[in-house]
Image (tube, rainbow, N blue to C red):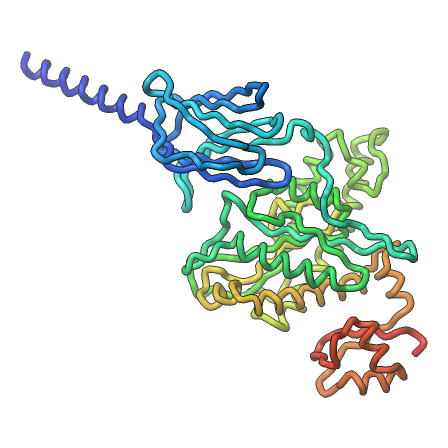
Length: 439
């Protein structure tokens, strides 16, 4: 009898203590990430929780009721993105209500995230502009610039990987991939914009996260001729080092083609504007395959040129273009490459990634590779295509000077500098100079 009573008491105690433990979820921190088209709030929580979200008007606000939850850290003060103010109050003694006062009518989306290497449990709240929901967001950056002759610039979309809540790989000294790749992307944009007939568009120009398919969509809206995703590699062995360039694998391309064929909207964008509405399934597949094959060929050609150019300024992890199923490379209509700039897990390369000098050198090499690619594959209607028809090119060899090259082609040094936008007579081995035809 005594044994049964003891078991009952222990069982009740375990039930009560288990209930108390389950009932006490703590919010231990809040982070906010403003992006051009949305604002993300991330609540750090001690365990999964039950919550309910609803919106109220006049004034506009979002209300989140969290069951059996306590606020262990004060909410941020001030405004961020679409949120003017955050406030909280206890409900029913055990529950928590958080109110987001918003600047305008927003569309909220929420989800829970499980722990990873960097963060614990999280509740994510994304707020999208209700007025722009379902419409294309115009890029604030200049796109296909028309010049006086009516020819346009080629456009390169530069995608800095990760961002916001996703830091990417981490170096031993705390260097975050998302930070260094954004810095490299900005440097690369400067170098591209300095080239005649070329212009860059940054997919991400701040510390916020963009979904992979949204990155592809931004490039498509910018009518990009090429998509470049910038990353930094990592491995458990800190001795791993070197840069790599990737294109989409055949398997990844096939799976993506199947998804696009299943969609009914915007298919014409993928095959040069040809409508697929009146085509049978087999014809649709053939047209998409032709478009995708051309895109894959251009992706590999551009990747090979960039890899070759990078190999002259940094160590390569692989001397051939690699293939993988990265989602961000899956645009069937835009040639796409992914550059792993270095191993952030390698102490020496982590130091390089943080170096402005290395970022400058790497960006110059990538631009050299891009110039060679567009010389080989000039885009119709572009200034570069016109220049390719009216110019020839000279690759600088050891011992050559600008004056010797000018004498060879019977052109003045001043004209040669102007044609190639050279600030001085300093040149380097492997550099390609544009020479007017007929000289």
